[in-house]
Image 1 (cartoon, one colour):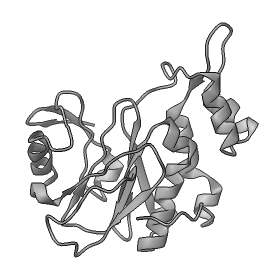
Image 2 (image 1 turned 90 degrees about the vertical axis):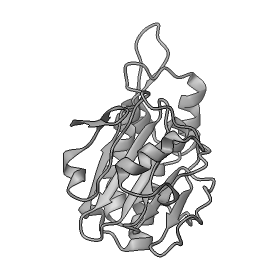
Image 3 (image 1 turned 180 degrees about the vertical axis):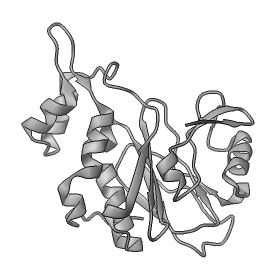
Length: 218
């Protein structure tokens, strides 16, 4: 649902609101790493600016961890493309252009995650990494999670080169998966369905069986 922020409209997911306040903003507010406009974002999130925790995003699959009790003002953005936390005194954000912002909340534990999922991070299964980190770090049950994927590059416009399809194959994605995620029409380059790829990773059976890749988060 669309709601109003001081700078313009923001988008919220009603099922996720039952777990954690959140919003997806748009180009009506230009956010850079140290921009003063982050003050307005922090205010809408209900936290002081020093409790707004961001990332130095690198299009990878590393998941940072922010724990309750972290002293205010001590967070230095790590090189990561996702963050999980159980700290109700802080807010967490990722920045995207045409990549997918994914926000996740756990009904029972209250843990949350914010993920920056472009095609490179999606190729590296970052959505699954975030779920695995919530399970490992905060004992969240995958079946208790609600995820919202914000506005991003859609299947109509996600034109990619053949080298990207090859990269997905090299990363271990099988032919059936690649056929589902990359649409092919005569005379057109492959078009990547970023939405479907991230949804597929979030609901994959291995996530619910606790078999996600075992990367150690930061």
